[in-house]
Amino acid sequence: MRHIEGDNFIKSIANILKETCGDKGIVFRWGGDEFISLLIDVDEDDCKKYVDKVNLVCKNRYYKNLKVSISQGYSIFNEKSDIDKVLREADFMLYKDKKEPAK
Image (cartoon, rainbow, N blue to C red):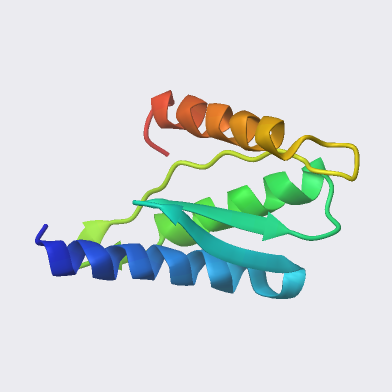
């Protein structure tokens, strides 16, 4: 994939995340090909539903005749949470998801 096509692909993933997130939160690029979906006022079950919905949308999408798939991780943040710990937990879950067989 050429550089411009790679950028367009990343934008298409961002759009999927934003569409799926809707008004429940915000999505921003963390770096490279990593994004954070910050969901507001949700619990772990809501997070799992969001992850499942994103996976379903990606499973049914193609970009330039290539099947779209992503790896995801999440963590729960509340007023007592340490943001660094929350990000590490989400990162751990992301890499755990990457090691699982293709969805």
